[in-house]
Image (cartoon, rainbow, N blue to C red; front, side, top):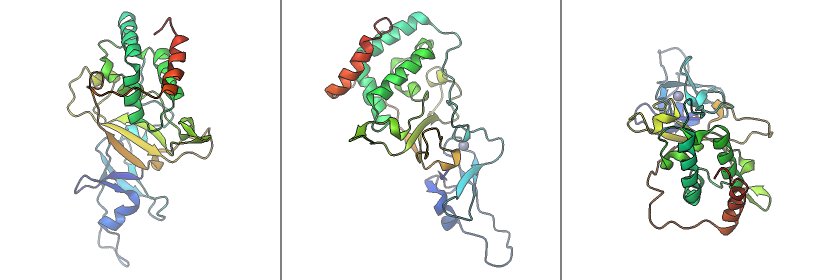
Length: 256
Ligand SMILES: [Zn+2]
């Protein structure tokens, strides 16, 4: 990854700026200087500076065995989202309620994913249906966007387009800090200060490519809004987005 927390202030620092801030080995001789470790924002474990020979490749690395979501295989969704002991009746009720409030969910998701396309929103609903995400026991509706966000990566080219060009520039992926081990931890285990993070990567050069963990450019802590279902002043979405999603709902009448 290209960004970590400084050990002194716990503020974000780029790998390219790290040696500039904390020093380098002396020109001749060995005075035993050791660059201090930085801290991974996701798992809060130590990371060290690597690839210093060129500024373009300098990045932070975990020590072996760190098992951090930020360095897990990029193809693998961070949380397995099929409930072990699902509740289909509760799932049905949750889908009905989601259907009634879908525009509010859309708004939250488009705050999380800049330039979210309606097709991306629909895809998330299809994934949730395939994985039976709706059937988690006591799944609160206000947690839905914050769970759906973990089921997919968001490449730039699936974003909304302007004159045929994707409006999103970077590849986005979401994960929680290591306080969250399973999706139910979001609402069942009382975990203090759950941290949701948005990772940005450069877009791979081919559509079959995946960004690599050490290419992580930016890690943005996301604040979670759990009052969005009832907060006043909600503005409806643009009509073309409503039409696209409503058409999809109409073709899934048995589900929603
Ligand atoms: Zn980590």
